[in-house]
Image 1 (tube, rainbow, N blue to C red):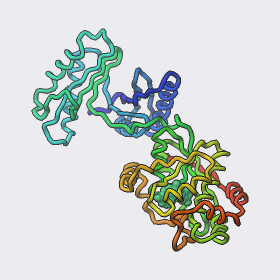
Image 2 (image 1 turned 135 degrees about the vertical axis):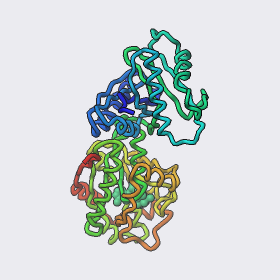
Image 3 (image 1 turned 60 degrees about the vertical axis):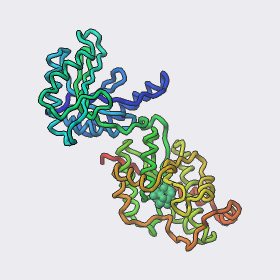
Image 4 (image 1 turned 90 degrees about the vertical axis):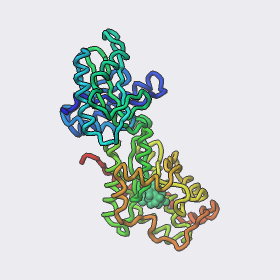
Length: 396
Ligand code: ATP
Ligand code: MG
């Protein structure tokens, strides 16, 4: 079959009103344009309740790409046809024959034709045209069983007047909201499996992410930093380029090692990370922090410890993974392409000078006493001053 003439892109019917809705649709069109033009030239057009994308070439690849963009409900590679029943019939048959050649699913397949007639000047009703097309395309396909309810295969026709479309494929999109429509958040990104998945889920809810990582050179080498950069780049496939902050964390970690009780080290590292991340978020206009924290996965993730850690953030801290089991997180990581990178063996600064028995249920007074000796403000300010701002681009 030849390349599709256009992609019919459906998006979630949001319960957004007036101006919000227009902004949402505009953001979605922009995000689609950015994602698709990395493949080839494309023209984007808005019609009622649909976005149309006209690829200059590589239409099938563009359809798969469009189906990754947040806010998209589904994508159909489609073919244009004159508003003429004979022509519609002929193209429908050609498309269906081709789709069935490629479809490996066991037969019989349930099937229906569905016509949407937006242009009421067309001389047949939707049902009449559906019957006529079905009568024309079905002969010779014993493996098809007509069923009007949730068919496994659907031939779609949209009659819109000047432009009319026929399609059989429907790629499911990821849903969610267009990236950027919820504002900007700063993701604390480590080399683990969890935080890149958390970033992906934040993007899904319309956040545009920046990334911040804490790096303790020379204890942790350059290759660990590269791994985290690669993770950021991989997850940026779903939003486009981002800021990437590399915070020098050695001095803070050494101070904590030398001046505080061993048991509290990990909690104090994490409290320090939040203070620094909040200051950078404030200066760079990020409105929230986002982490890969979960409940009860590791020692620092009891309610008591998470509470102690969260209190040093001056922003809302989003923790999108809190309802996920590890297996579920791994399944998402595999699907979005971060799992392999996360599995590269590298050291993590949280395990530096790790105590033999870290505190499991940290106590606020003990924690405050532990920090009393630390020159917190100086440590935070020097870390922020030494932070290097890089940029990650998924298309580099
Ligand atoms: P991950 O798989 O993301 O490393 P985790 O389950 O190992 O998470 P922790 O090591 O306790 O859990 O880290 C919890 C969260 O703290 C991470 O998901 C990340 O958001 C943040 N974090 C931890 N270490 C760093 C770091 N070196 N730089 C930036 N953020 C970090
Ligand atoms: Mg970790």
